[in-house]
Length: 305
Image (cartoon, rainbow, N blue to C red):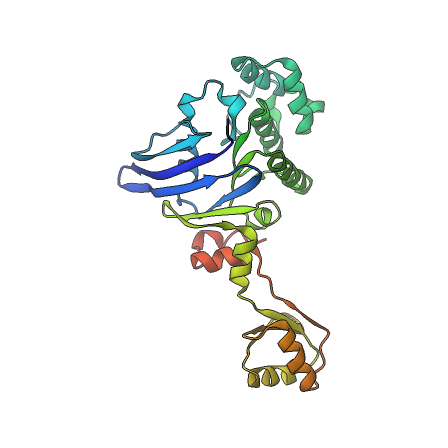
C-alpha cells in the first residue's frame, strides 16, 4: 500500500450548514502534515469522511488509493485517534487493546509492544475509566499504532498531555514520519505544529486556504524583514528611513526593518555611525504567519500561550 491520503472535491451539508465546500489536499508519506483552521472550518468532518464515518455529498477520500470501506484490514493500513474517550471504562488498558487486536488478527505481544511505546506499560492492567485525559490520549495513540499502519490520522493528539507528554508526542510524530508514514495531525496549537509539522494544510469554511511547507509559510510571512538590536533606536530610525527602509519598533532595543537586505542595513548603520549589536533575518512564529494568512481568525484569539 502506498501511504498517502488523497482528498478530492469533498462537499458535505448538514441541514443548512455547508461543512465542506470542495475540500482538496494530499497527505504525503515521510512528513507530518498539520491540518489547521478555526472551529467549524471542516477539519473533523474531513477526518470522519476519510475514515468512512460520514459520507460526502460529492468528492472522494482515498487512503493508499482506496476508500476506507475498501480496506481489508483497516488497522493495519490506517491508525486514527478521533476521540480519546471512546473506550469501555470498565476494561483495563490491555484488554481494550486486545479487543481491538483480535478483530484484526493481532496478538497479545503486539499489544504489549504499543503499551510500552506510549508509556502505559506500568498501568496496563488498570481500568481505563480511572485514567486521566492525558493517559486516555496515550491509550488512543496505542490503539492507532496497533496495526503498525503506514497512514495515521490524529485529531488534537496533545490535548490533555502534560509538558513532558507534549515533548514525547512531538518526538513520536517526527519518528513516525521519518519511518516513511503519512501523518495527518489536526490541531489549533500553532506552537506545537511549529516544532513538529513539515507541511501545513490551512482550512476555513470548508475549503483549503493554503497548502504549503511550514518553512515556506514562515518565510513568506516574514517578508524579508530584518531585525536590528541597537541601543540608539532614535538615531537608527531616521538613518534607515533616509536609505529607503520602513522601520517599526520591536521589543526592548529592537527594530524591524523592511525594504533593505541585512547587508545593506549594516552598511547604512555603519555609515551613519549608529551603534548596533545584531542584525538578523526576522522570523515570525507559525502562529503569527497563520493569523497573517487568515486575517486573525477570531477563534484563535483565545489560545495564546
